[in-house]
Image 1 (cartoon, rainbow, N blue to C red):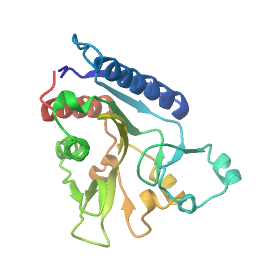
Image 2 (image 1 turned 180 degrees about the vertical axis):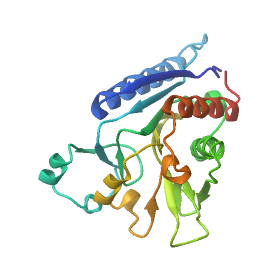
Image 3 (image 1 turned 90 degrees about the vertical axis):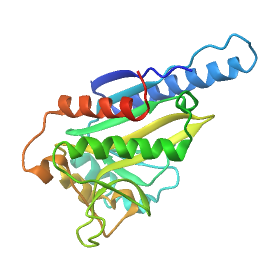
Length: 230
């Protein structure tokens, strides 16, 4: 079992290009696992964690509702944004500058966990990261992701969205943590399908801009620690 996690920081990258890269890594791991089923000398499967910032883009999960996008194509173009249907779980969300998107392409069998536990690891890594900035993040029984003030219905707000795809215990897609994000773009959608909840960012919560590289380092550290990885 390979418990090493390779961190790949792409900096900035177009959504489709990074999705294609995910698919390449995802299919590589699936291919190794399929080949391993036929051989005695098993080949180790890699685990990669991609960090990236995307240009303005709205993405819709496979079970999402297009009506949660509240503007038309012309209005999207005016905002220099695009709309992409994906094969991840979840509904609609926004990606853009100032947001750290993490795509873990992991073989979950390397870490002896299932999909539900893996999602909780992602949530916990984010919760521990934002705690270092004095922000108390929590889970919500009704939705994945990391939330703030879930005990206050009219103040509940999401700081990190999560949507994944998995096959044969191999994961792709992942999480989007709002760090210095322009939250105005969320006004163009019902974020994750919710009409009665807001969104926030680390910057908004603590009142200052945060170093993106610093946040990536903290996220990677917590992922490695929670998965007891190398």
